[in-house]
Image (cartoon, rainbow, N blue to C red; front, side):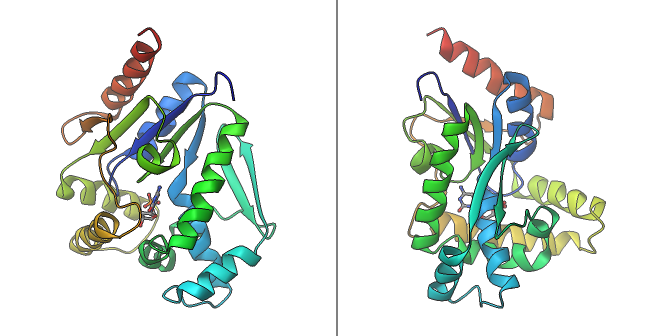
Length: 225
Ligand code: DC
């Protein structure tokens, strides 16, 4: 693991973490990892097996009995579950509505955190999530917390959903985002908080390119310290 770097990018829903993390990974030649996709994968697996996402024991059992494989494709760390690679499926409404509940189950978090940590075996990573700087890679010297006003985040998410052909209403997206923020920030295990030592970036009035540059510059500067 000598020379492997992990860049932690945390923040609430639709704070721009994905676009920023992908941009930073491309610029630095690092592997991009979306930790939320794994919580979504567990949720998707439960739903497709007919398991109630509210039933923590059943979701845990379903997750543990599945076969998970992790690999790198096109610069991103991805996974298969029982041989299937879910991508668009992870963005569906059913998964979106249940994932915060599933992500609050301690056994699920333990499994996901260990899986995420093992991705560093593939090489240097830019990982986005909620607890990357606090729990997954707490020793990383490269921690960032992205934020933006809830209204701005809801508009970004709404535009994404409409572009993906989903039939959504802007006020419902804002309500659902606030609800998820609330669950993420108040759950007992690993709530969303700013990691000690993280650089906070408020992207409300920043362009994507500006945010990427802020992170890349900070990482490069950190290297010369
Ligand atoms: O980033 P996202 O919307 O794909 O995250 C999906 C859910 O998973 C969301 O409720 C927050 C949770 N999550 C988490 O608890 N910890 C992470 N590191 C990433 C996501």
